[in-house]
Length: 131
Image 1 (cartoon, rainbow, N blue to C red):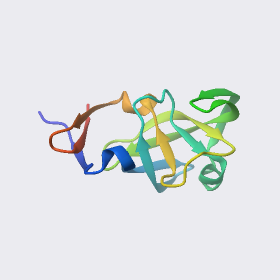
Image 2 (cartoon, rainbow, N blue to C red):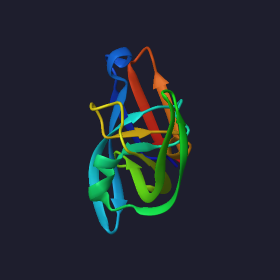
Image 3 (cartoon, rainbow, N blue to C red):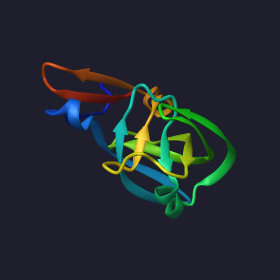
């Protein structure tokens, strides 16, 4: 039995990171977005500007510790899928301002732990396999 996989070419990993197609389903609508795979991030994070049209269900508020320091935000509930792999319901951290514009969502280990994620350096690719 083989699980579905997506393969992302990463010829310039040092500069651009792993930007992958993701989709967030909220309120019966699915939104295509761009996500940066960040294996060092505990939680998946997006900014208020991206979150507003998604109409995420708010399930809490709190403080989030980031590489840049502590920020306040809220927690939204939605299903997130990477590429064509199955979506999983997770709690997304929503913060007012994000320090990026090359992608929409920082994809953390809260969703990545649901998949097998392998960076293949010699082949310059990232392989994400559904479990």
